Length: 220
Image (tube, rainbow, N blue to C red):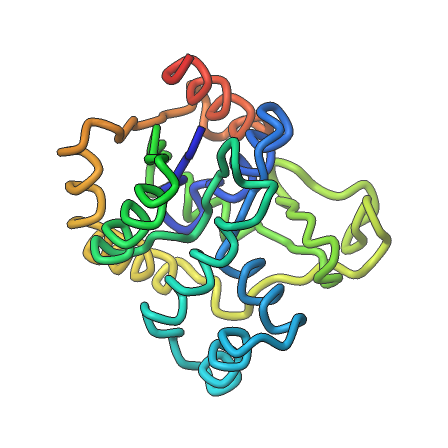
């Protein structure tokens, strides 16, 4: 099963993708993970990606697509994957279709997490992330606090919050996401694979688990 996760910043897309990966035994592949893997290996694509990232620039489509293609040729992706953060544009979606077509595969389902803006704002304003990049556990001081304030339950590293997380910038990021993803969402809607997922209680601590159950029900 080939799954593309969509959702606005703060929708819980990444968390849901990780839970879904455990339930389906499919690899969870995020754009950031792919970049880091290529950079660590010292590949030409990795060096190209790093040259843009180190300067705070977006990695061009052709480089990103090349990295995705390389990752999807790995043995662990033969039965399917959960893609998180790719594709971001219609052009990338078309490229993904071509990559999968070469393997006789296709995108099976595209869950789009639908969360009310006020809940997203509240989530992000109270979000804390483990500073240990190898861990990356996410907490929420309101809905899912760590056992010890400011300390990760998993690895004991300090927790941090983004300094630019305020209501105005969050709402702006939501508008940018909607504008940039319009064509992508329409593309998957026309293909009949888009499924809008709305957790019954988006403010609940287990909202991501609710979303995953809806995804599994929608597909299975």
